[in-house]
Length: 382
Ligand SMILES: Nc1ncnc2c1ncn2[C@@H]1O[C@H](COP(=O)(O)OP(=O)(O)O)[C@@H](O)[C@H]1O
Ligand SMILES: [Mg+2]
Image (cartoon, rainbow, N blue to C red; front, side, top):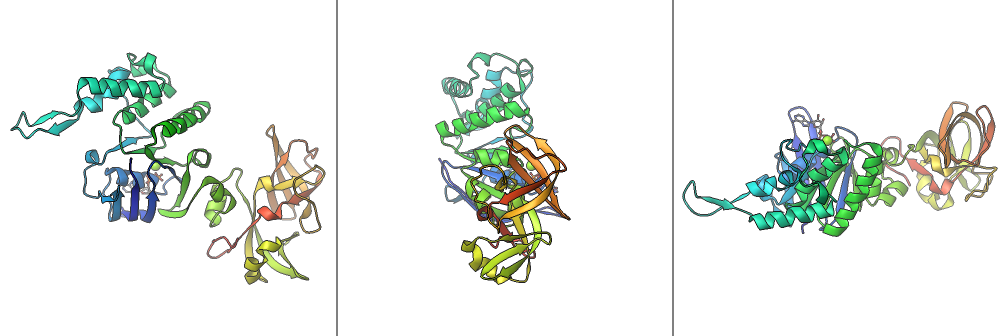
């Protein structure tokens, strides 16, 4: 059981700052997901925690002990890579036990008797069988990797990490080589496994859906910098800035360059093509931007077809008539590309909607779910 703390952790390569002063407290037993686009520094951060990459600044603590100078094998960490390689000539059992069989402890005797095996054969057998049971590999222990499916091979790679009974799991996009269906299945299995073992886990992915479904908490990174650390729902409902708002959620949030205006005692956003009334509970924050440009954000799923019974009551401040450009039926929803003049909006509309391409459609914006961002700092105004 272990906590992991990062203090101003930094990695500078010759030309790039891959990780820029990140601070993070990963709690004991937590499943923390690091998510961000390719090249944002996820792997580098993970490799520094593992000790495979030396930090150029800052500290890494495991259970409150600074481990910057502790070698990887003494950090009590298991690392599962994206491109795991199993030994092709070894059985599943041998692949899973290999690391344990190799592990030596100093014995105090002179060379070549100066090391002894860290684990007895019985202990190794117990651990491999336990991991095989957890991962449903018991019947496959004598097979060679080429006799396994991709998903089974991935489970063997996980098994190899589990048998070490580490304090911390580090996983770097471990599911990215699996096909979509298997990825969803294995995702669920990993979560169950984490519940059973309760081992502190740092899980890296570029896939925001994976992050949202797996993480107790999520760290969103961009350009080597942490953008926000929060629970999945808080990230979705209260993104701290434009980057997080656009990265979390699919299809992505609509961003419309707008101006804040007053209309009597109401605050409005003017997109240039239509006006919407800002929620009164946000008027305190929005008032500072009266007469100024802001970026108005609304998620596709917060726009409704007015002719259907919706959860949002239509009023004069939240309805707009738009043109329906393109329709993508997805089963439960319809993705709609809507336009009004030069303003374009993507909406996820209930599939009961009868709107067709070329139609004019009245839509309702759920303004309570809207967002405003400062165009200069890109920080959320609300
Ligand atoms: N060994 C290296 N030498 C130089 N630059 C590197 C090295 N490893 C990674 N980088 C750079 O550091 C940045 C972060 O890379 P990485 O941590 O692999 O990102 P991610 O895992 O988020 O895709 C990238 O710009 C990458 O090109
Ligand atoms: Mg990576």
